[in-house]
Amino acid sequence: MKLKEILQGLKVIALQGDIAQEIRYVTYDSRYVLPHSLFVAIKGAKHDGHQFITAALEKGAVGIISENPPPPEFAPIWIQVEDAREALALCAENFYGHPSREIKVVGITGTKGKTTVSYLLENILKAAHLQPGVIGTVSYRGPGLSSPAERTTPEASDLQRYLKILVDHGATHCLMEVSSHALELKRVKGINFAVTIFTNLSGEHLDYHQTMENYYQAKKKLFTLYSSRMAVINYDDPWGKRLIEEIPTAAVTYGLHSRGTIYPENYHFSSRGIEATIKYPAGKFKINSPLLGRPNLYNILAAAAAALTLGINPAFIKEGVQSITTIPGRFEKIENPWGINIFVDYAHTDDALKNLLETARELTPGRVIVVFGAGGDRDKTKRPRMGRVAAELADWSIITSDNPRSEAPQAIIADIEQGFKEAGKNNYEIEPDRRAAIRKALLQAEKDDCLLIAGKGHEDYQIIGRQVIPFHDPTVVKELIQEIGRSRG
Image (cartoon, rainbow, N blue to C red; front, side, top):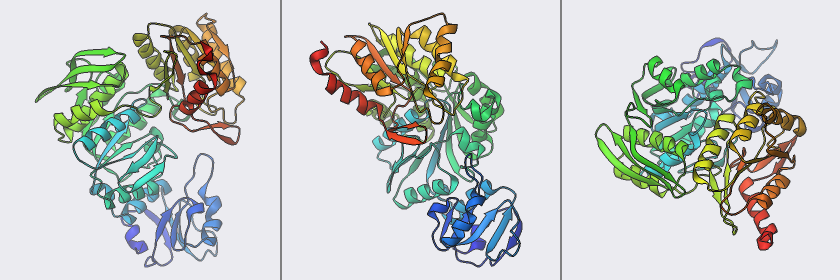
C-alpha cells in the first residue's frame, strides 16, 4: 500500500519524503520491524519509541512517524504529527482496510466482569451458529486467530491486524474487552462498535488514573468518542446510572430490579448454579447456568442484553448460558478428594474480593479460607482495603505474594496487613511464598469449607523482580493435591 493511502485522515504537521513509497508493515515496536515498514514512535510507560528509531531504520523501516520534527540532515521519510498514538491507530486502520466495518464488534468495559461477559457472549454466538472472535484478558482467539494475551486490549496496530485476521477467516463478530488504559491511549481509535457494554466501576488502576472521576471519564470515552450504535449499561451500578444520563447513544439497561430494560425474576443461587427468568420488552425466557453467585447473574444479564441487541434468538441465549462450564480463573472450581470447595479467581481489587467472599459465604456451610496478595508497582491504596475486606468476610486468610514485581513482597504484605489491624482482627497468617501459602491452606481446609485462591486467576506466570516465573494457580493447586494425597485425612 502507498504511504499516501495510509496517511488518509491523519493530522500532519510536516512531511518529508516521498508519499508514493510502498509500505508493507505498520508497527510501533522496533523488534518487529521488517523491510518497508512504517515505524510509529510512541511514548510508553517504560520506553520511548524515539529511542529505537535508529534500530528501526537499520532493520529496514522506510518511514518514521513522530510528534517531533526530523533531526538535521535526516534522509528517510519523516511525518510529524500532533498525536503519535492517534496516528498509529488511524494508519493501522487504513493499512488493514477498516476491518471493524466488516464485522460486528462488541466493546466490553468495566472494572469487573469483562472476561466472563466475553466468554458468555462467545458461547451464545456459537450456539447461534455464528463465528465469534475474542480479544481480551485471557487470549486473542477466533477463526484464524490463536494467541496468548499480552494485555487486555492490544496496541492499535496489533488490534487492527487481529481484526483483519478474523475478517479474512470468516468471523461474524469480535468480542473485545476494552480497558481504561486502551481508551486513554487511543488503542481503539477508529473501531466501529456495534454494541458497547458497561459492567460496573470500582476502585482499580488509581495509580494511573489518580481519582475515580478520572477513571470514570476514561471508561466513558467508549460511549462518547467512538462509533457505537447501542450501549448496554448496568443500571444497578451508580456509575452506570450516571453514564446513562451523560451519553448520546441509546441505551439498553440491565439490573436485578424491574427498573432495567432487562431484569431477572424468581432468581435463585445454589451450589449448582443460577436459575432465573429473564424478562425483556418482547417477552421472557428461563435460564439455568452452572456459573455461581450474584456477580455472575449480572454477567449473564449483560451478555443476554447484548445478544438481544444483536438480534440473537432467546433460545440460543438460553443454550449458550446453560452450556458454559468453566471460565479460566473466574471462580474456577478445582476438584479434590476431600470435599473442599476450592476455587481459583482473578479477584485482585477490594471490591472484587468482597464479591468473591460474599458469594463463597452464600454457598458454603463451612469456613471460608482465602489465599491472596496484591500486585507490586500498582495501586497501593487498595491493599489495606483488601485486607479489611478479608478480615471482615473470611474466617481465615493467608496473605502471600501476587506479582510483587520490583517491590519487596514483605512491604506489600505489610500494606495488606494494615487493613486487618484497622478492622481489629487477627484472623490471618503470612506466607510470602505463594506455593507454600496454597499448601498451608489445603492442609487447613476441611470438608464443606470453601478455599479461595485469589488474585491471579488464569495467569500462568509470577513476576518477582525482573524474573517472570512459570506459575499457574489452578495447576499448582492440582499438583499440591496430588502431593498431599489422601494422607491428609
